[in-house]
Image (cartoon, rainbow, N blue to C red):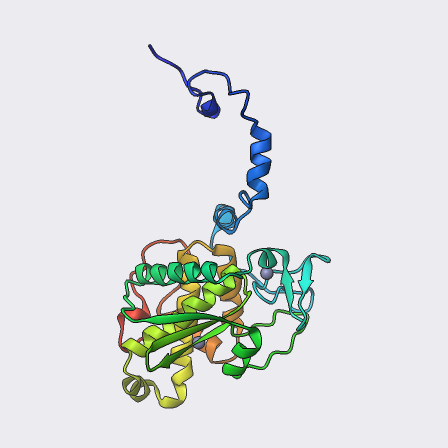
Length: 278
Ligand SMILES: [Zn+2]
Ligand SMILES: [Zn+2]
């Protein structure tokens, strides 16, 4: 016996009519109401399909930008936070709020970093959510919201007697949280694997930040491309490239030596493979 199955009608299971108890459109609506169909994975897939690696260009002065993902804000479709920051609808929806969600995300980023860059952390790292005020105080950043994109540090890492601690801003959306984790974990890798005095001897102590922040910025952007967060990656790359500080200048140095791979292929050369990266 041969049953011809039309793949478009797989629910009919070999030609049998769909079960009466199964209501396709209600099921679809139910799944969509639970967040399926428009989650960040789907958005990444759509972005990949739309053409990976196209450079994002800022249009200064013409629009407001989300302070978390740098997407232009359309009409009234955004939240104005108490401290003046503007957050787009997508970022509001993906804010990481529970501790469990946060720890799972952290574990995923750590694992991905190890795979993408062929490294091992081999060290205890405590990860904590903190409020924006504490983060700003501990990183000595000043924050003054404007209509444009207001970049700021969403976290920091520090060394303690018991290992390392990683602080990330409470309520940050998923992608900026991931990016911050990748950036700060790169610093922890640097602390563990680089000989600071050798780095200073080669590049000069006054260039410390160019080397350390340049590589951490390079790694976070390469991480985003390697995990197919192409839209967000190209916005962050454009923004970082345009920065006039050590982060921007350092990123440009690293990008020149280690061109960013936007196509998701295996990385041949990365700064993680060198004691003296440039
Ligand atoms: Zn946003
Ligand atoms: Zn940094």
